Image 1: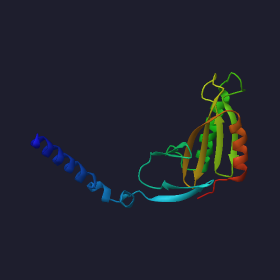
Image 2: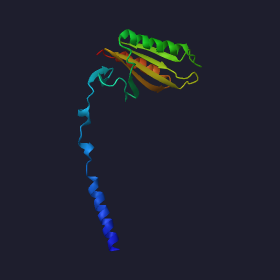
Image 3: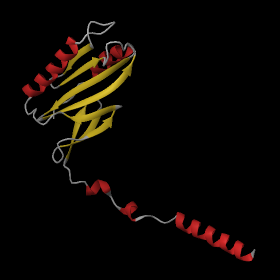
Image 4: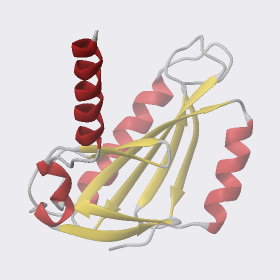
Length: 168
């Protein structure tokens, strides 16, 4: 019985002393170890640090949207607008059950950005997909998010009358 209490005491002591110990990874500054050159860019009300070099393909999330770099083959503004126009034409060519096409809204924002609000399926009348394309100097970026209901159209128009993406 005494041995049992002693063992419980030793185990409790070991458990308590192990709680305050930091692992070797907790002392490292991973942000300082990042070797990818980041460039701060203003997009609407957000300032993002976007990789300028290094990985060609990456993704992150911001403003409830998945952000990715557009294909590397897009090297000029003409390539960018051609890419956006092809996406617009594709969505306009697809039929929807309650709207003229899958494309519900196309809005150019400033000289370097555009918003496409669309449905993904002909029968879906609840969820919109919000696609935002931005050209920043020499690269294009894609923000994809979701929204529900028709009120998103009104919010987008109001929101983007005030905000305009800035060129880099």
